Amino acid sequence: MNYGKYLFELNKKAKEAKKNQKVVETKEVWLSMTIDVGDLNVKAKQAQKFLSAGNKVKVSIRMRGRQMAHSELGLEVMKKFFELVKDNGTIEKQPQTEGRNIWMMLVPVKA
Image 1 (cartoon, rainbow, N blue to C red):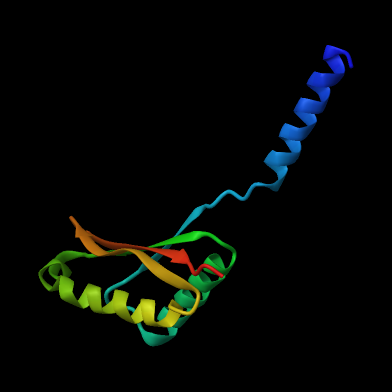
Image 2: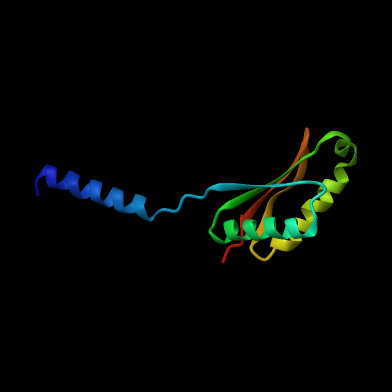
C-alpha cells in the first residue's frame, strides 16, 4: 500500500467520525417575574422541544427596579417552570442570583 492511499483512508475515517458526532448546544429561554400561566406554558413547551433534541437549556429571569427586592418571587417562577419540564430535563445548576439575573441550567434526561 502506498503512502498517498494510506493518507486518503485516514482522512476518510476522520470525516466519517466527525459526521457521526453530536454537538450539544446551549439554548436560552428568558422568563419574567410577572409571567402569566399561558406564557409560562409556551416557554415550557419550547424548552421541552430543546431538551428532547438533546440540547442544554439555560433559563433566565432579568429583574427590573423593585423586583430586585423580591428575588424570592423569581425563584418561585423558576420552580414552577421546572415542574412543567421535569419530564424531559433535570437541573444541572440550581437557580442562582447573579446581579440582576436569576438563572438555572437544565440538561436532557438520560434515556
